[in-house]
Image (cartoon, rainbow, N blue to C red; front, side, top):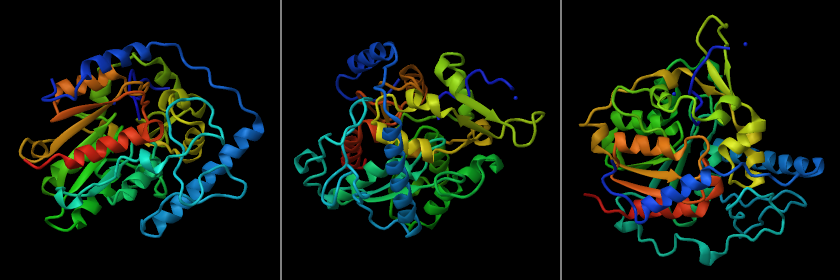
Length: 378
């Protein structure tokens, strides 16, 4: 969701342990973030049309997967004359914002980091993935494929009004309503069977809310470029600390007033012409195309809601944070501020990752998730 709440105007939201070389990585990320915006290679209208077709094909397949009850879905389907991977192959890796080519190398088996995982030694092998504002369960398609390849169980949630959930985001009036698909899942989850809860972007606020309600069913919580609020704080409060610092977000966001201009905003919509540089500045063009046809409006009421988080419940869940050093939406300075205000157990760095590491650095993200799953219970 990024810093969409900064300088809101009406118009027609110290770490206990850090991974090695954390400080140097952050400094390198800060230097890189000051570079001028990349110039993306130009594409012809036919190229854009092909990317849109591929994005739509993936969207349809993912939607069918969700409707089928979330059965194992390897994401290796292909469309006629498509350069997408065929059966038995993996998706192209993501490492830069250059234009994607059909000649890009595919994942090779020896590159996968999920080999030789002893699941019996893990506290849990079940990941629950929670998307950020405007995204949906579809954004995790690479992460789902890699985790399931390694034998993990994965559940990707569509929050209310997101992904294939049909509810109008403008009609969402509370955080509880927005997070209901997640809390319903955890409420029905078998007692004694814990999960690793993963939140991206505004999904960080959502998993914090769930941690307060169901601490005994969550083994670990992972925040990926995510909002990590403190007790009594709203997402808007947190973003207000960086008010006016992100000009790109100021230009990209557009407040919607479904109840009339004399009432508070009901949702936020991002300008698709600017969202690429804001959210996907290091991601492959095919994933930017996918997002352009699947991203939805972001409900505004949940952003305003202050959370009540107790040390006994929320504080009992082990937390981990993944920093994204090339993030233009939630900058590293804001990520560091959240970490210092509410220190997690450990901080990891995703070098070269933009705000959407599931697109830009899927293998690095996958490796860290697996590493976190291996951390023994205390």
